[in-house]
Image 1 (cartoon, helix red, strand yellow):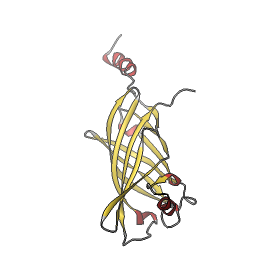
Image 2 (spheres, rainbow, N blue to C red):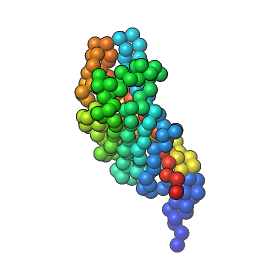
Image 3 (tube, rainbow, N blue to C red):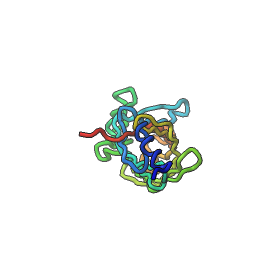
Image 4 (cartoon, rainbow, N blue to C red):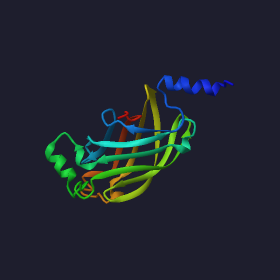
Length: 185
């Protein structure tokens, strides 16, 4: 007996749209991790991380089954100025040798209108704190799904408090993420 569901799933798969729970790998070539911080109360300084990875356990039908794991390599910070990159990697800021990763692991995901309310643990500089973020699904095609989020953390909450009067305490983080099923080997 054919049902609408039995026809819909093969049709979605033929279009390359994931149906049901599926583990997708974050594509580091098509994903970006940016940060913005105030500099001397004059301007906003923007930097990025060049190495990121992770996964998304995606379930379109049941958001509570979605799990997001993100890993950013602190050594890959890129501020468009090599001398500043070395300072940001130092113990004054990221202490990349001692803390080589910034990680996020979701603890709960709920559908909220067109977006997703995501709760999770952010670990940076050896400190783990719970955060809440809103994630927007930006599109999907050919087995790829895109997501976007912008959120703010206080760097002092994570033990990064060098130059508190010259640099803002609030760091705005932007993650533009594309994820897809890993290629078969």
